[in-house]
Length: 296
Figure (cartoon, rainbow, N blue to C red):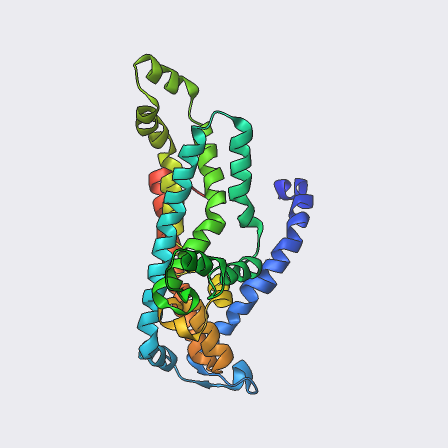
């Protein structure tokens, strides 16, 4: 109580954030009851018929559900791997640049797309890969047939993964560069005295020094493996590429908003939330056990 009296102003400063979180994060969780109801908007939560696990059975038996789950895992896994690999390579390359002005320019150029919304970038990418866009114009200049990138499942999934990595790689690159700067300079000096070149210094000093942050980023990204990028895919995809690009979040959106099947849509969302919660719990435990990372 003494501590509370001394710090009550700090607790009051937290109050607006707590209230907003309760209203917009925890309040909507009451809607999960729809997953167990034959929900009717006019009847509301209290008067809709309770159907138990029928919505889950219905969703799991849908022919599209397995494909949607597979798309989600494939897209998320590739994004997760490339989100670590590409920024790592960029950070290692920039670490070797001796001219600071050039290094800062490249960092800013790579980091810039991170601040743009998918509403803007989605339109740019659609225009780039459209039938009459610059990419097909370049193919035509090389006497190659134009490709309908945005209507072809074989190409569209790669565009989704590549564009998302391009947009977000600047953030992880900055994190990894910060990890590199934390490596003590005397280690490099000792390696030079022993005759180690830049390549061996990178292999035996830089990469081991970055190992904790790489493990942490990799472990924590596992918790979001079912988040394949709702906003990005919703803006860029179309019915032609549902087979290769429809993920759990977009499937829930179409099921609830277009088909008006609120109960099954809530069931899919509930299923994803339970799996995500379990993955987050496991990954945070692993991060604490192997990297001594904790939030509280």
